[in-house]
Image (cartoon, rainbow, N blue to C red; front, side, top):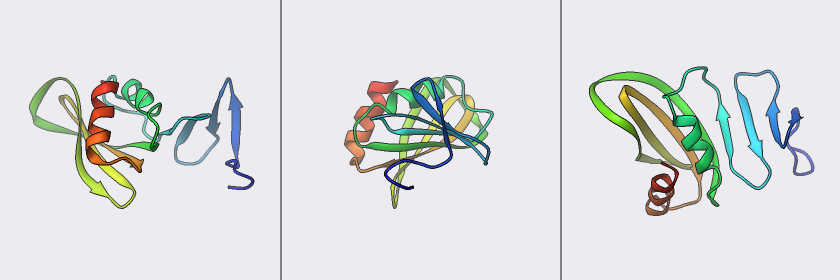
Amino acid sequence: VQGGKKQGLKANGGKREAGGGAGVITETEGKGTLVINHSTNIDGLLEVLQRLTEVRGVATLVPGRLSSSKSNAPRLVLRVSAPTPDGFKCIARKGTQVQEVFVVSDLDQETLEAAIAWSL
């Protein structure tokens, strides 16, 4: 980072995307960052995370590992699971799919939970 701007980002209609590397970083000025590093995400999760980037105090959202479970969640659910050094680990569920979401934020857990409820 040099001069307050990230290097290696290309302009793309109001958004900036990183070229190459392991993932694509989507960033809009004045909002948090959504890191898209998987080709597969739970259906509807990216739209919810995009709304969550609009919350002041949410710096970065990183969808993680996608897996299956035996139990069934009839609609998309996103809940805070555990604190991390930089924010929180959340779990997204829909149907039998489960996906980790890492949130880099300075919000407390209650405020993040309220922001998640708003974004759903």
